Length: 366
Image (cartoon, rainbow, N blue to C red; front, side, top):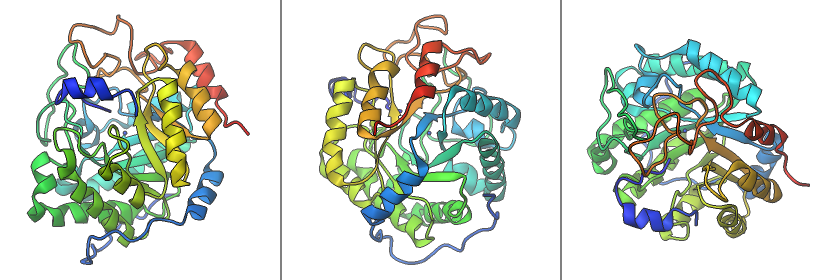
């Protein structure tokens, strides 16, 4: 999800649009070059997409977790809440979920993290949900580095106040740390790269966010190479969140098997972007979308994705410690004010029942 904290004037002007059972073994990391091999042929990507069908997805963090560190550490991993909420996702009509993994937790507990991920994938599969996994994430609402241990409580009234990036920003450009990052990518992708419960590997969420700009591009390129060296059966992707027509964005699409992007703009913004991205000749999936503002809601955006055969992931399932029901721009609202994101109250009741009906009815136009 976009952060407006770091360059508010620029972003406010430009954000219109234009997170089978594996064998839990460690794949030995390759020492080969980080240059990424070619992506799938377009025909292979389309064959995969035809098999998958219309993706109706949601970006998910358990309501009891303030960030991905709290989600995935052993002391605070909450399978009871996760099982209940993934059941709600299925009942709502979602077919897939997108979520983030924290490199730092893997670094200190790789076996435990993979066991918890395996359990999570099992819970998702039990409810008929596939999973898109994000390995790196530049978003830094908290303006802090990731830390192990207990996470701070959410800041009242602040959207996603404790979200930290992965890896830490300094590690993105410090190549002395890259051997560890390579082992992380190759261990996780190597372990789950032939697991049917994993739908897509989204290698880097919003590269360039958090003030990194193009400094994150080399790590993104390297991640593609590392992941391809272990030969996963799933597609690899990374998509832009802004600046859709720049050289870094074109590089993302040159490396990706399927075309992904974020769009919190209007239906007209999304339609223009989809038209433009069709030029790449690959399946289109918007991995973050929809905001409850005029022209940007479910009723506005879903018909556009249906017309263009685009899969989508909305933001937020159950309102919780992330507080992503709050808008980016204000610091004084509460759960009782109009929501910008999230679909369900903590008790599972829909914020707007009509939105659930739209999700369940979503189909591609033939």
